[in-house]
Length: 391
Ligand SMILES: [Cu+2]
Image (tube, rainbow, N blue to C red; front, side, top):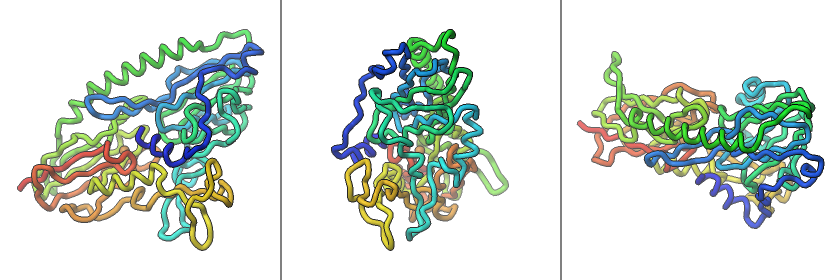
């Protein structure tokens, strides 16, 4: 949520915020078509740890041609409607792998030092002039209709003009597990009701919460394993369940001896991305990049500052806007030994980073009672941990 607010404060800057009233498009109401509202994500807290909702809060939907779907953003997500006839997993594999046309992050190699940038195709809307409840975008089943990130919007509406018998998916470009199937049924057939969606949402939220609460005490227990070269302690950079993720470092405090190693695991990240980055203040600095702090307008020989109001941002046109990320925010930094000096980072790993290998650091110096503090480059200070090293 911090990130959403940060984007908003950076980018809204007097721009018109779309009306968010849950009112059906008038054109839809007139010919008997319906509007269904679907919540997207939503963060809450479980015993002080952020529980990040990673779900389109609806069961598989049945709709009529002409019905409108309104996605209500409750976190940092996209609602990206992909062409009919391809399932979400196959589409992600084809379009979101590194270098893909919808990959979230791409290299920004024309600048020095070389950095990364958010892919504009992923973070900005396909059609900037539609998507409000009063003026939904039209989805015909053939091409992608992407909401972009909820920067100036709180909701995104799209009218389904695909034909009965067609089936399509809605995905989030930030969270690999977020996908919703929609089936277009014949006019005589019944469709999903809003109350069925609302019931699904409240029951999944309750069970997500219960599962996360049950998991936390287990994650807080420090475990380790022996290797030929000594003791290795296990830790987890975040932990994802089905439809949710705990944005914390587990266990939040590690107690180890000088010369021992800690191995942070990432294979449990089925939907989210995180990093393990020492020191904590460096991670907090990098998290500003993910919040859009480094917006520039592409120019030669040097990029310029943003110099036009949204949604253009650049006097030379919106196509020249770059939301850059420093290399250190994304890529691994430093050796596998840490004694309290310099930066050590796993780099970003997890579902949409396509990197699941664990990250190991050997601790070469003792600490006081506060230990070495670290955090996640993506989620910043709210996702912190500490390693207390004793003789
Ligand atoms: Cu994180």
